[in-house]
Amino acid sequence: MNQDLTVKSDSFEYKVHIHRDERGLGALVGNLPKASKSFVFCDEIVFELFNKFISFEFEKHSIDFEWIILKRGEKNKHISRLEKVYNSLIEKGADRKSILIALGGGVVGDFTGFVASTFLRGIRFVQVPTTLLAMVDSSVGGKVAVNVGRGKNMVGSFYQPEFVYIPLNVLDTLPKREWKCGLAEIVKHGLLAGGDYFELVQSLGKSDLRSDSTRLMEVVKGSIGFKASIVSQDEKENGLRAILNFGHTTGHAIESLTKYKRYSHGEAVAKGIVTALIVSKQKFDFSDLEWVTVLKIYKALGLSPVIFEKNTEILSHMSHDKKKDGKDLRFVLLKKIGEPVFGITVTESEILQSLKLQKSMDWR
Image 1: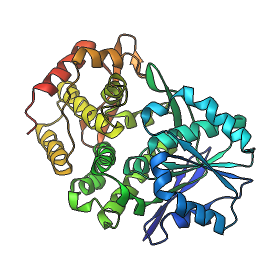
Image 2 (image 1 turned 135 degrees about the horizontal axis):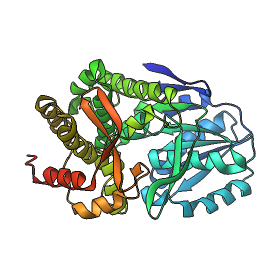
Image 3 (image 1 turned 90 degrees about the vertical axis):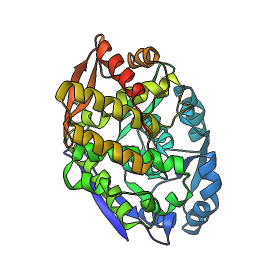
Image 4 (image 1 turned 90 degrees about the horizontal axis):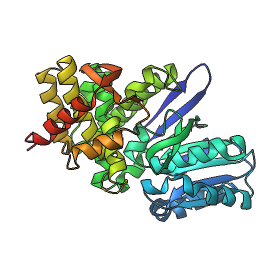
């Protein structure tokens, strides 16, 4: 079973191919545009998992390609890693007709996209996400970036892929922790979208965490479709697209504070969503009934809202957030499920109060 979606605006258009069949990654080759040479970017673990298969498919179709192997982890999406990669591309003969293929999770996708956006002032790239989180989030929308010492994604650009290829089969290689990361993003999209899509997210259970689940296919398609609809209206986050930062103000601060070692992006965002909902209860009287509904979803999917880090240290790392407004921060909040509001000013004292409340709750 395969599904195709289109991400389109006045300035760009590309296809998202969702595949779930026996060809798996092999079907990628048939979708590749012509290129002088293809460069497959991946980390060491993905290389070990797929190198023989990808190499066989590319060589069988006489595609000239090279591997660019990156170190694994968020800390390696650092600006200091760029020079080595640029030099490697030059040495391997990359030119303006080459194409970069990001094969991996969000770190690889972000990094590869940033390289593509800057190498020779911009060459083509393809997103091939291999984690659930990357499939429903970073692979679509054209946000590419690298990290610096004081913040995540502080150096980047908006640069759309040539197309996105999503092989659901590879999800069977994911550990449970990586599944939860993607589920956090799916829950976020459900809360923002509301309606039928939120109901579909509510119906997800642990039994659906397998690549051949029909419900999972529907959820992935719905999540990508929701994000695509937002990006199509506001590519460069001048307004509406800001709602996709729901949960990220706290989430990014926790990631930065723990040097991207303790939590994955999805785990941090799951905690940040709860912080944002607590602030929403204070500012917009987000209903107790919907609050309980969200907590039931968290329990059903094994997501954790628990924060261990010091509140003042989290606040300090929030101060580097791109959404900062003077001393205060701007949050994405919910008036109710399916009714997000963005650019809401939240004071330092309100943030500290919310974090304190989040820590005091019994999450059992």
